[in-house]
Image 1 (spheres, rainbow, N blue to C red):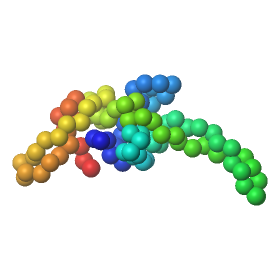
Image 2 (cartoon, rainbow, N blue to C red):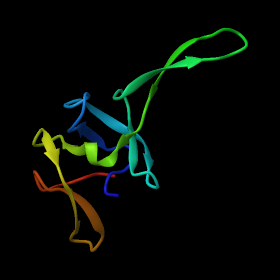
Image 3 (cartoon, rainbow, N blue to C red):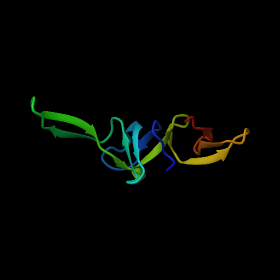
Length: 101
């Protein structure tokens, strides 16, 4: 998986298409990510002190989101490259900028 916790992503398909948020959780075994402020579902809360509803972010499949490149302001793929010091870095292919992680 090339996306990591804290990356800013944009939803590219579905009802939430076009929304931007940061990845809160990555679920690699299920190929899913939880994005803050996107795909919010109301869940009924059952508790002894009272009931009600709570809003929870549900996971997206990883194929429905793309890395959002802040420099070019559009979705981008992530590639790996080796910098001058010899360490492996992630690079946004839309603008060829190094992704800080």
